[in-house]
Length: 176
Picture 1 (spheres, rainbow, N blue to C red):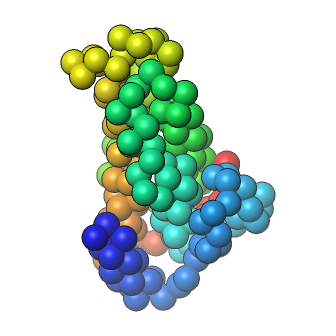
Picture 2: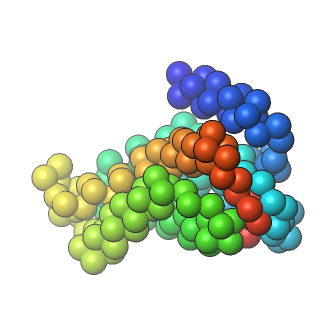
């Protein structure tokens, strides 16, 4: 269902934007590939077609990251959280370079950063008490679930920018 909804939303964005940005290589390690090595400064370039697949790859195509973070103390959860936040850092830099407002994406990124900071400050990784269902460490799922939400939020921001005639001047599709 999520993939179908995402595909429909992408079709709308591509129809509005008239472009087909993105590397198409969703199996690559996040932050790698030509787009990561050679940032583009093409005006009007959308970020979602490149960064959406990177977010999905970082959290796992079948939501493996969210599943792993049901056990916040696990190495798997810590690894997914780190991978997602690495992609988020690259995306945040790309948003800055783009000149686009991306208000919803910026708010989602702030929530994800707060969840990651609480996870680290709480010493959750490796602490078996973190796995207690009442532990505040379960807030780390805001990072993995946030990656899926951020994917759609980017799309929403970009559709809004297009609808209001605000192009993503100087947008950068890659970089990490």
